[in-house]
Image (cartoon, rainbow, N blue to C red; front, side, top):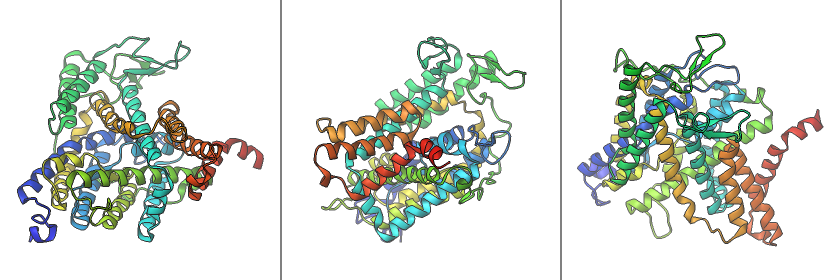
Amino acid sequence: MLDTYFKISERGSTVSREIRGGFVTFFTMAYIVALNPLILGFAKDGDGKFLGGGDAPNLAAVAAMTALIAGLLTMLMGVVGNYPLALATGLGLNTFVAVAVASQMTWADAMGLVVLEGLIITVLVLTGFRTAVFKAVPQQLKIAISVGIGLFIALIGLVDAGFVRVTKGGPAPVMLGDGGQLVGWPVLIFLVGLFLMITLLVKKVQGAILIGIITATVVAIVVEAANKIGPGINGATNPPTINPKGWGLNIPAWPSSIVDTPDFSLFGQFNLLGAFGRVSAITAILFVFTLLLTDFFDTVGTVTAIGYEAGLVDSDGNVPNNDRILLVDSLAAVAGGAGGISSNTSYIESAAGVGEGARTGLASVVTGILFLLTTFLAPVVSIIPFEAAAPALIIVGFMMMTQIKKIDWDDYGIAIPAFLTIILMPFTYNIAVGIGAGFISHVAIRLLQGRRKDVSSLLFIVAALFMVYFLKSPIDIWIG
């Protein structure tokens, strides 16, 4: 029955290879269950509240919902799309939601925009318009977007680990460690985790990122127990005292229990149109557009890359069940917003399972089941300091950076927009700024080159929207 439904023999695979591939994919991306709570759980919204509306972080709830949505959607991808592709909360997307979106509204409003983005992209899939949007943006600008997000993620990891810190009144806006020097045990934990992950990746050890996070966390627990380092910022004092040698976020300590009843209280905490009452309509629309664009192009690139590695691409570059795959991915964005843990998207780490032999959706079903089992281990994330998980951001940033070689640096109409896209994302701490600068400069340079026909009409519209985004402040003044 399995062979007939999933076409295992037809694709040159076996049940055992699919199961093994499913396990490998899980171990290469399970870090998201620990990392997503650290990205979303500590961020405050425009009202100063944490995700879920509380006055304190609820990391267990974020971890449980992260695992639940990833499990359900990955299984759905396997059963409906029959493709060896796993889904989870998107890195880059969750950072954008936490840093840029939620800070200007409530968490419910921000998740409403995520749901709205998912609904729009679902309509684009059902109408076939998604293909037209994809063709409107030059392939190399899509690559630049991915590379820029990779650098942005890496910078966030360096800052949150205390390796790079913002300075006030110093010779530079950011500086190595504290006053130009690395100080404290937490930074050392970060370096140990980073070099361990690099070593495991070089040795091609499956699950390198997850092993690195676990090992660094164990070391951090031992170090904290022996040295009583404490928090980097002690909010119990008035005014709060700062310890440059302390832990950046939660203090590593073994929880009273490892297994617990999953907390799914975040489900349904979204306000579909609430953002339009907190920020201008233009700002809200551009937030949705940025989410849609990032989600859209990451998915198309991932699906294609997995297809080529698995040998499932036909002579025209198409993958089997393409419409079903894109439909499940678009529904994942809706589910992620509805679950309160940001948009879910396809993971390139699925390639690890394909390398292990996975060729069908059975591998995704196995990965999904493992994610569902993880929901009962949510309390474990409360012991993971950011210094132990931040190395994963550096590694993921590196993986995304490797695509830069595909950009034609001799064509200024592509090279300059790609350069602006890549550098402005980390330099401005804003993904939308990088995308907008890239689109606008591409359109402008092509017009200067007399190559108007090389730019689609849809891209002109998108560039115009970004011009409005950049000129929002003077426009607000002009219209009162």
